[in-house]
Length: 210
Image 1 (cartoon, helix red, strand yellow):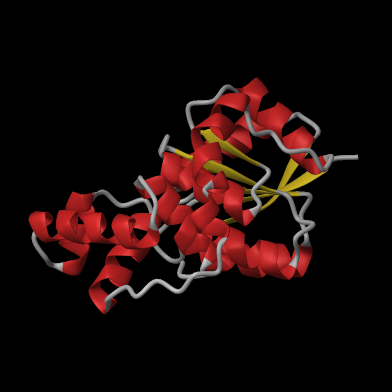
Image 2 (cartoon, rainbow, N blue to C red):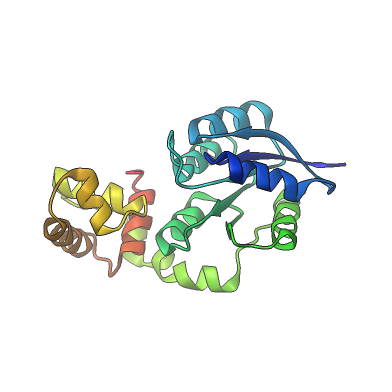
């Protein structure tokens, strides 16, 4: 029996390449979509065996799509397939219940192995990936139900930070200076009681801010 896979990526070349890579294997690409919103709709309506999900897409980000899929149907395995080796993305993927995180530079064999494992209900997180985010996921302050008085601007910066944006990208998105963003990030880390951006991203996920 073939493993039915949904591919969600906003680049046609990537979707086509994945389809070619998976041809003549036990993995069948049953649908391709170009946005997070489309991925959520298809996955919940058709329940593929595995969803391959990009992160940065024009219409609906992949990590938000992951959260929505897992909220409504936690049984659907989702593999993140990204260009970005970003610890914030990896931490959010773990926190939101992804089966694994693959880079687009992975080999065909690595991709097939991950899809088969996810379809079998296994996770494919590597020891190195989990080690990178374990500190963030285990921080006691993150588990505590503590109200943190963030200003509106700090909340906006935190959301962008949790989406994996750099300070420069946040400055451009919010149309404020780079130095102002740096200052907001320092205030956020201090208020939340964490030491880095990855921990802040996990806190934002657990508080359902993103």
